[in-house]
Image (cartoon, rainbow, N blue to C red; front, side):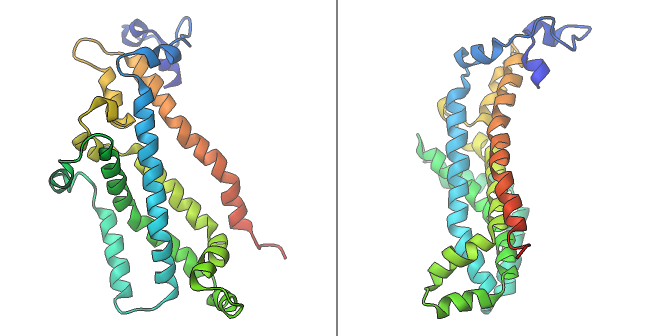
Length: 248
């Protein structure tokens, strides 16, 4: 992607192929913002959808996973099995139903629809992985906090959550990357070019008569930067959470 993003259009389509550009065109990274398919709005849409879906999943999955891990209620195993089964479904399978549900949503509200869809399809994994981490924390830790006067919510947020940080990080990375890369639902629901996320907007660089491959690869390279930054920021916290308490 990096090499192709530095080529001219002729160098990309030349026969025999030119593997390395004679003069790398760094200008492609500036010119792409001035094309008819500027990635600015697409990046904004993708960021809003990915961050919104991640926050929604954390808001719902955290108390659900904590409750499932800490309490034994009738139908618990059935609930966990159904949660796992929802992971088998993809937006493509439910295309007709999703379209009928959100076809009247327009404008920026369509981003809200995509946040709900991405949150729903990633919620099951987040609950499953986080409940496993909550279950690994001894119940005696919560009982000691309750005896000291903390409420159930205070115990979850102040005692349990710091101990299951690796599980939370795993859920954040999984949900964010999946939402960032989601294509099927966005293609089906977002018809306004100004509101389309990157996955839907990028193919517009390849039209019937003009194929701007160099811009396509430029935007593709730009699109992976936020994910790389996320991993770079979270890596230390993930390692710190995995090793916390290993040495007394």
